[in-house]
Amino acid sequence: MLGKSLKFSTIVALIISISACAVFQPRNVDNLCSVMSDEDWYEATLASQEKWGTPIHVQLAIMHQESKFKHDAQPPRKWYLGFIPGPRPSNAYGFAQALESTWDTYIKATGNSGADRDDFDDAIDFIGWYTATSNRKLGISKWDAKEQYLAYHEGWGGYKRKTYNSKTWLLKVSDKVKARSLQFSSQYKQCRRELDANSGWF
Image 1 (cartoon, one colour):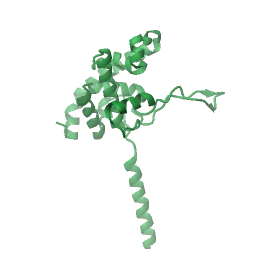
Image 2 (cartoon, helix red, strand yellow):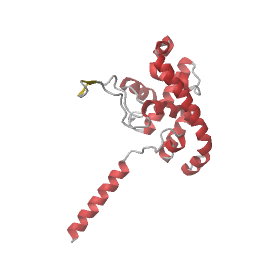
Image 3 (spheres, rainbow, N blue to C red):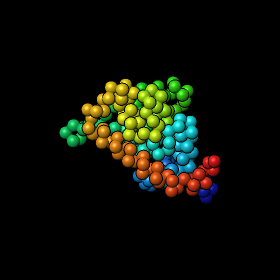
Image 4 (spheres, rainbow, N blue to C red):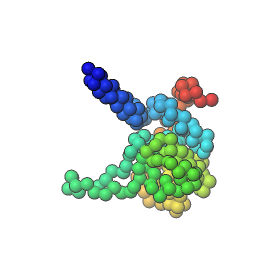
């Protein structure tokens, strides 16, 4: 009897442990209030805003476009004959879809040596750092979601060369990011007081 009870306790403990490690998934990725309902995510985003100066709605609009807040997002791979997996177009990964080389640059610049691309806190800090660097290097306003996204996608060198002008599809995507940021800004105004109260942020 004691053995069965011990086994049951072990199973329960294992389930609780697995649940604790589960990655938060927003119920509605198109609503900032839903995305920020996780207190840790909200506090991390506020910390990034305070540290780098890029407003919450711009940071989250970029992340929405890149991963829809999926922690292990990757670019879709090519398939041959409909069932043979091919290579992915890049090594972009995680919430921010950061390339390994750009992530390494971020770590060296910030000293955040333990940063992981599939960790929300690190990914949102990365976006804050990147947009702040785009502001410093290129003069792009931290509030300009459209231009910030173009620099984010093309890289600082590509943005300087205006490589985006030959990519009609990318210009359309950047317009979507701009529209998303405005939507997120409006939503944030509706729930900011509640989010602040729940998180204890002052």
